Image 1 (cartoon, helix red, strand yellow):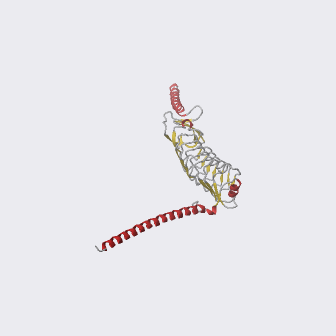
Image 2 (image 1 turned 60 degrees about the vertical axis):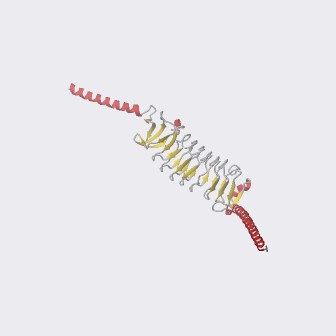
Image 3 (image 1 turned 120 degrees about the vertical axis):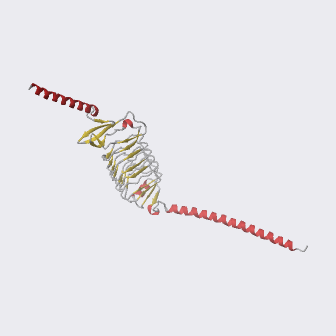
Length: 335
């Protein structure tokens, strides 16, 4: 009986030791004191069988490193990322690849070295200030599935010159491209109906933009400090925020007669052009007339040069004939 109990006790002790060692090692390697888990170089939390990355850090990271965010951590899909997760390495990360498990972007602001980012088709929203201050990000492609772009989403991205895709976007927040001084290529998505406050303020490289007919309103300081030469309104009823700073002073406003665009131009002494005088390529009838006059003058100048050249040739020919006639006459004189 004693031996039987001793054997049972030994078995229990051995199992306990094994479990203690295993769990102890797992806790030592996997769980931090704050309850988050570690899978080097990722720290993450698990809630409702979904992983949320809270921190990323590598001591051995070198400048110019690309980061690939894992699809899963701890056997659970990565569905979200804590704000400023990458901030500790903001000057080192040059590229980020986002997994299909992520549906919203929010954690990439102030990554000063970031030059490229791969956004999956599963993303539906770019949250407020998601890429604010990523001053080396030059271009970005937005998948068709993205529906919303939050406030200040790309604000301060001073190298950003082109935004491609994004045709599924229905909402663009205030200051979305604030201070994007290199931006010149952006087509307003078909689903967008309003342009918010300061959306393109400080976009000094933007030279022209067309406001589609579906746009119902333009917010305060929407184009303040931009480099617009022309702004074209395809609707006669688009509401323009009543301030001289909404559209730059040097910008020509193209729109319909008796429209809100013409009223704004008249009130704030802006140059206005009737949209009916503009061709599909954005060329006005005045531009066509000026070009025609220039071409006509050039044609006349060329014609004068041709006539002058022919005249000189004729004179030379006549002189040659006269000289030849004189020589013949002299040759026929009696000796």
